[in-house]
Amino acid sequence: MNSRTDVLVIGGGATGTGIARDLALRDVDVTLVERDGLASGASGRSHGLLHSGARYAEADEDGARECLRENRILRAIGGECVRHTRGLFVQLAGDDPTYFDEKRAACEEIGIPTEVVDGNAIRAELPELNHEVERAMWVPDGVVIPSRLVAANAADARDHGAEILTHAPVTSITLEEDERGETEIARVSIGGDIDGTIEPAVVVNATGAYAGQIGEFAGVSIEMRPTRGVMISVEYDGLEPVLNRCRDPDDGDIIVPHDEEVVLGTTSVPVSDPDDYEQAEWEIEETITECAKLLPDVSDRTATRTWWGVRPLYEPDEATRGGRAISRGSVRLDHAEDGVENFVSIVGGKLTTYREMAEMTADLLCEKLGVDAQCLTAEVQLPNANDPAKLDEYVREFDAQGPTDTDLVTR
Image (cartoon, rainbow, N blue to C red; front, side, top):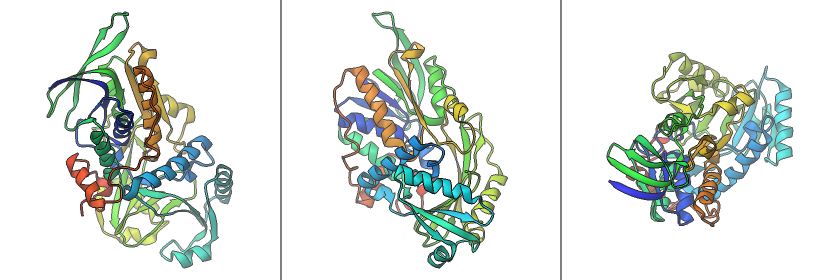
């Protein structure tokens, strides 16, 4: 295969497929390539939390506002790609009450709806909680079903003219000087099922933790700081809300409900290679032990699957923020500043904010292409959003099944 395209998107996670959808809805010619099936990286290996912004409210006001805004958009456009649960921040005996108060005040300032309930009231509503709960705070957290979300974005992009190529790894990038003497990407070689070249006008690197590797192909340094985190799904029927431990973010402080299971998470351990890293038993044990402090009997439940995800953290952004408690901000990089005129990367971020990350990237790509068209993705519902069977057909079509939602998809 040898072809031309206006935009080549490298990476088939939520952000990459979101960019492809955004551009296709603006009538831009776009091709997406993914080395494996869609959602095979961080998107499909997350805990699937749809953030309300409350987790970041006191530490990162802008990031929290972004989460709240995108939470509301995704609930409107996502249909059966999301589950409309609530979220609960739980203060246990021994947890710092000042932290709870600061989070509640920050949520109020930002506009995140909250409701504080005392220990007796929340134990009456959720008797399975640790009896040492002193108080709790309801927030509008939810659950993302990432396999469906990514596949639906890809399907909408395809239906509007995009080409979606899975099992199509990038093997090399060829740079040339244009007639103005500026360096640009002339050709991208694709292996796997494609085995050909693509000649793009612009290339966007949306490969998450692999952004640095794709940057090297183009002679650009992108400093990533990937960290791994474990998730364990256990049999647990009927829990409604997402549970968050109301303390500084640490190992084992989130429990995400599915229909008949809950996902326990997570750890944060630096890795040097997102494809080759230790999967340590202590992470599993620590996560279960800590999550059991919220929901005691999860330690006695049957684990159905365990997986690790690798967060695509951007080193310069992480260095300025510092520490486990930071918000997972996104950064758009225009590599014209690095001497490659038609190359853009989008790094960092969260699953909840994928659509806004895609929008700001598509805006820059359209500027480079001279395209005058507005983003539509906040208003246009994902295709067949309210038909789970059809959404699961998309998952199969694009080989988009990830471990996060195996129990919910294609059952």
